[in-house]
Length: 418
Image (spheres, rainbow, N blue to C red):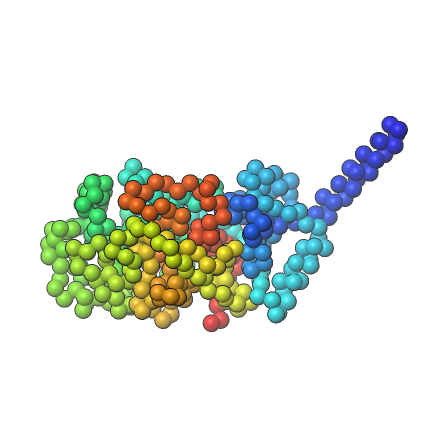
């Protein structure tokens, strides 16, 4: 009996060893079977950091990842509680053949190098009161990044990075138009001191110079991702180059009475023909179609567009998700006015009932930019925002759109055909 038991165990070990030899790939599904969609992106980044490749299976089971098998990778998936499947070569070939079929709206994009990630954000304790969705999800997914602010941008430190996110920032120098709030008053004083230290007459001049450096970074091949007021005010500042649009409460002197007519929309990335709001308004312009009280709850949804994975590879990458109808979320710039979006900007997601655009993409020189409206895809309404605990939202489709952008620079890109 002992001998039979030994032989049986030996056979099991051999079968197991034989399976491992044939199981040369790990599939990380991104459909509803995935236990943690957000940490799955962290696994992909973990592999890229080791100079290994990741195949992104566009539109296959929610945009799954296919990676060469290793025990270390399997262990990492287990540690991070990410769902995975170990596949033999035959099954992998079957999947790839299915994706390659010309009538199937799927494709494979090879990711080959981890991008160097930077976040444009203040570096003081006041940021804790205004949580940033990108910082939140990068931390949760365990993706490394560096925080930069005005000093580093003006020293041209951006050349060290591939991808930059714009914190919900005011590039117009109007201090976010939140001067009624104590923390905003303190932050405005910090920015005024920084501008003076760096040789600028006022904050708006410093922020314009920063915006120009960021635009140059994008044009030279960088990847720019902006959310909320960071997207809106970036375009306003560029269009208002050389024009004083700030009232005296913000910069000490009166604005140009002809400021609106002097805007140069060709300098902006995404928007044109927009109208500035008065300085007493909490809104910057009619780019923003959000409600006057942008902290209130919203029960509406926006829809991601469906692109051809065979031809429109970039927008397909940026819209990978397990859900294509996503609950709207608010912010200082909650949604973009469809009627001021430039024709060359590609709309990736919108609320079709209200004509509100939520997610747009474009190219600038050799680079790429994406604007995503709203503050926090899972944020709670109300004036006192608490940091979002993504352990409660591991499947957030709104946060997945952010992480699509983080992986975007790793791809071998093909220019879209439409």
